[in-house]
Length: 129
Ligand SMILES: [Zn+2]
Ligand SMILES: [Zn+2]
Image (cartoon, rainbow, N blue to C red; front, side, top):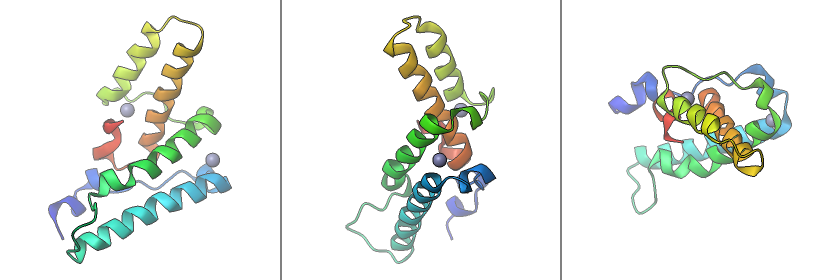
């Protein structure tokens, strides 16, 4: 086992109970973890020639879950984390964006997609998006 896998920064957090009450969340979450596990297994068996970086390979499935959480569960997402610089970036972008039309709404949605990562992504990768 590499140091990566024992580091709590790389552990998947336990998703909150309300996610299991939403069929779409469950599907998206399981898909994300399944892709991650398949990649981890390829990595353990030393299989090469495939893209086995666990972060890159699960990114698409993570983004699908994040978009769903931002769109349907925005009221259940956690607040901004003062220890997270990406939270700070999103916050200041939303404050700067005075345009009442789409741009502000887009900044808020991206912010929510990031907040969603605090729920489902390993702590070490939360700030990547
Ligand atoms: Zn859901
Ligand atoms: Zn954050």
